[in-house]
Image 1 (cartoon, rainbow, N blue to C red):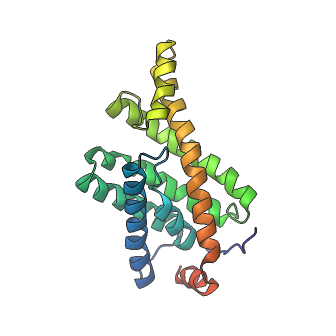
Image 2 (cartoon, helix red, strand yellow):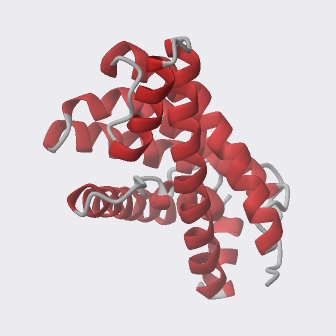
Length: 200
């Protein structure tokens, strides 16, 4: 269950090359379809960062952040207007995934789990204020919002209730997405992985 860690001279180097210009739209498409699929089936996860994970793992945190940002803008313009504000969260997720991957935290199944928890914390910290501002603290996922409702009914402050709601959902979502990205990445030809590494 281990993969070779691809090292780069600098994870922050970014060049809008042909490879990157191909990867980013593909990542945006994966994000869009995965999120629409999850919402259509009322799944207890969002899945809308799968493309961001893959872009960050292949081409670094900047490519992942751009992919996440563009996806939320497009999704907001077509299906869910308020989705655009969560572009901030996706930028942070792309950066977190890219840094963790470069540091070797996607090299084994055990490390992927730890990475997913770290990414969930990052996502929850940024998303909670947005949830409070735009949704009164809720996330839009029924079973998560039921936890929020119970906490509010027990006079727990809205910020704590909202963070708990978001964090519980983020742990589930990011663990699922992280392992999906991990297994997809493992199946990619080493030639493709080296292509993006050398392109940096």
